[in-house]
Length: 108
Image (cartoon, rainbow, N blue to C red):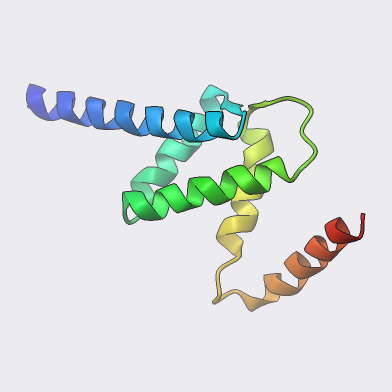
């Protein structure tokens, strides 16, 4: 039992480091609440490759917003995550809103 807890903790630490490293590449860092939310998502995610792709997209979308600080909390990444999870091909009603949002940014 102690071994299982130890390996689970090292797995969690490995994931935390991976998340932190990914955001550092974008010049960003995460507050504890944001990191915990991403760890939660990792547990829900099918595999590491899928989760890595999600992190990549999250970093890019977050950078495209006007940020007041490079240190992100759940308040900054929450809406982006919401947008990403709602952008499911099965949910076409959100697609129209997302497209108009993108056009607004392109127009500057």
